[in-house]
Amino acid sequence: MRLRLIWVGKTRDARLRALVDEYLKRLSRFVRCEVTELRESAAEDARACLEEEGKRITGALASDALTILLDVSGTTVWSSEELAAQVLAWEGRSVKEVAFVVGGHLGVSEEVRRRAQVRWSLSRLTLTHEMARVVLLEQLYRAAKINRGEKYHW
Image (tube, rainbow, N blue to C red; front, side, top):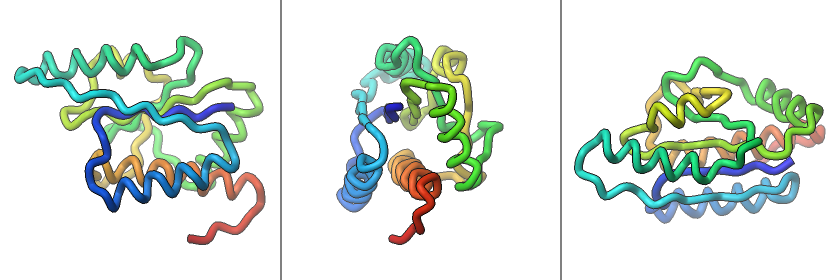
């Protein structure tokens, strides 16, 4: 199984970028991972911005990918152990690719929302998009460690 992380914009904060890189390196020991950073829209109109970024996101998704949208209003809220169980279930169902999508500063288009099979809320707290990337990667790494029966240490 491959994990694909799709997000709009670069991780500009150097400290958060270092954490993204560190967790990607750690996670890559357990599972194939790929990050796709999509260019932010330059449109001034919010609707046009969402539509443009939405087209880029859907264009980056494989047709058979299980798509998980990180969404503050998502109804799925997994604990670390529940996420680990989900990863095992996806592997058991022979899912080839799980794509995790983090939208831009305005969110995502309705097209992207419709395309997602799961809308996952990382927390009821509001996180910046850059921080959400770090939390996502850290939790995927933690799930991999849990599934291998290893202790999780920083």
